[in-house]
Length: 236
Image (cartoon, rainbow, N blue to C red; front, side, top):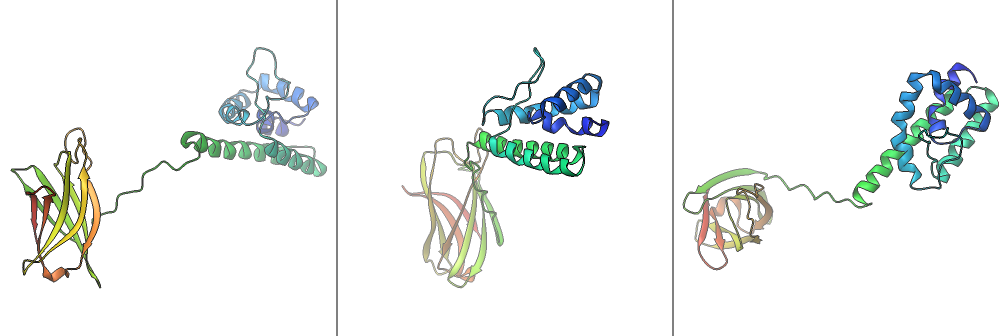
């Protein structure tokens, strides 16, 4: 085994893929080479993750020392085929060592993602930003504050709402009030006990809705309780 092969066989050794002769030579080299020991330690976490998907590692590690784990069968087959092909052209395993380490790291990243979220995308969808012309207001008596964003549409007006300073349980809705007094419900929602934009629950309520009133027809918006009463008025 050349010194180049010795240094680059860490990935294959970590996956338990070295043949007996090469394994013994590499273990002898490992006792004298601090850089290879450090690289093997860095790969051990990936090898451990892969070991949960396949039988235990092949024998060959000294008693009392940490054993490298064996990769899943498809990974083993792929790397072994690559190793045999490389050796037809040269004795060294420089390309194989790098490829084996790359396969281990890539597989480890993928497995870590699957194990962390159990194969499901648990991230909540990002809240939509308040777009368009923005108008803000605060009601000191109720503690509510909010911002509406308005975007002209062919069917009327798209309305985004960001609301803070409300505690539940409540049922509310947003009304667009026209300059001629016409009213249009934009959206409705329930407020949980913890509320929105308050101590202990700092995130605001963010939602989207719309009204058939054109942008130029709207005078103001009102956040109203379904049971009656106004929490906040946002003039334009």
